[in-house]
Image 1 (cartoon, rainbow, N blue to C red):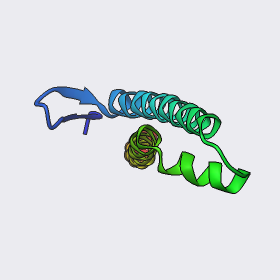
Image 2: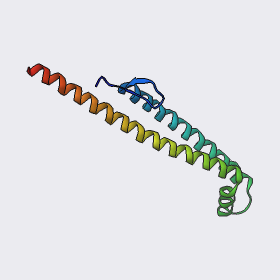
Image 3: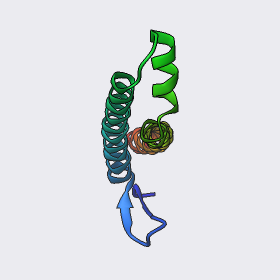
Image 4: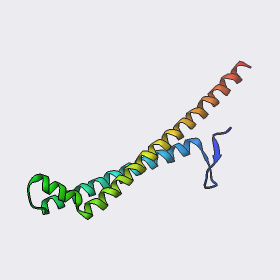
Length: 113
């Protein structure tokens, strides 16, 4: 095994490259999730400030604001995508480390010959 395998897209990329791709996907997903969460928080704040009544009433009205609900759902979906990307990166790292270990074992076996 040379550390390369066909990807689902038909490209031959090394396990190290696939791991790098997975790490980048994690960073991108994290940034998107953070950005969308900030946007949802801002929409909540705007709805809270626009609402009238006691604190609990204003909080309830802000949570029911349509713009906030949509933004919160988008942020939640992005946070889920981030968790999936982390799991995929972890799997890619495990596969890469398994390959490295196998290659190191091969090198040591060659030294013993």
